[in-house]
Image (tube, rainbow, N blue to C red; front, side):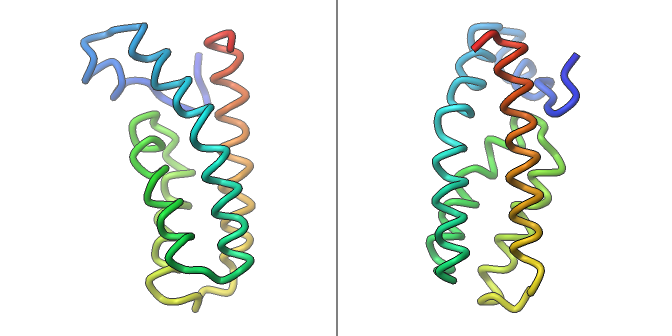
Length: 114
């Protein structure tokens, strides 16, 4: 049973298609780590537009996969970009996001045998 993610939305839109769920899981594993690295670099550079672009790109995937706490972290990061860095704790939020993404990725790899 998945603890770090929830496929109910995936199965709902795909009418319980396991192949579609596998495709979404694979896409998550391919795309999200790249965007997390890009986001890390952009935060360090205080490049708000690049940070926003990476956060915005992964937001729908996190929502679709039911990775709710990471989704909330992304919303905070997007808010940070709009405020042009007025949140001092953004690096802590990012660290938490990275851990949550990593935990979900590990669980998805195990569950889907990827």
